[in-house]
Image 1 (cartoon, one colour):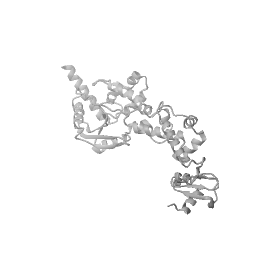
Image 2 (cartoon, one colour; image 1 turned 60 degrees about the horizontal axis):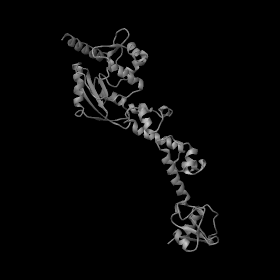
Image 3 (cartoon, one colour; image 1 turned 45 degrees about the vertical axis):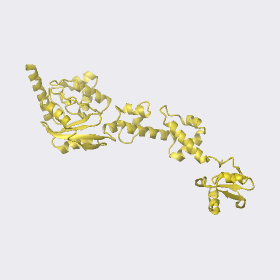
Image 4 (cartoon, one colour; image 1 turned 180 degrees about the vertical axis):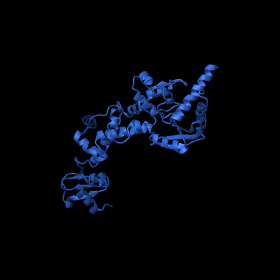
Length: 349
């Protein structure tokens, strides 16, 4: 049973929330409408209320051509059109302009823009950018590179990714393992404490320090956005292989690596991996081999997250001195001496 007083209040307020609950009919025009109909409000004594459009038609009234009470309401129709626009905006092709989107939806650009913002709080362009950005964020951790993640998310290149001043860049977020769980293990070795961390792809950090707390702190700094899980048992075999290489440099480990850095850093790190054990290169020589500058090479070496496995200890200063090393000159000297001794033993035999 309809409460006629409440129904009349809804008609006076043009309450769209009551559209599917009843219709009202106007005796003077013979038309029935939705409560939200924008037409001129009729006199109360001319109005009757009906639970359904069918009951109003059975009483001899015809549907209003403005609010279309027997189908989806204009608001519901706009909801459907905005939902369709959202689907078009996430298609893998280039994001359509507002005019192109409006033409495909069947609304004017201004009408679509108002309806879209009223329902999503964003313009179509901002909504598409937010969705694409969310897709990028979800794929960064698993992608082979920032460019791979950008292309998969619908970007044509990576330029737009760095135009948002929102803290970490995409490359930084990927390097800091946003959304990932990294396993790590710590063990004593001839150089002090050794920490090995692994992602699903391979070893992403190999760090030296004087205490477990020190290497754990460095890991947290390097991968600030990751969830870290200690797993000494699961990574024990890899740790033993690395310690074996420290003790016997000729036993080079063959572990899968997950190196995270810029294109230039990767170029330097690949060059480091090509330096044979027992040999060294000056920063200038390494820079010349890749067409760069010694200072840039030195910075890339300093940012290397994989001690020993990416042998930045094999690079020395222009005067032949040890120069810098992220984990201390004493460890660098010990590694070089061990490799030189192993090389001499191999040559003498």
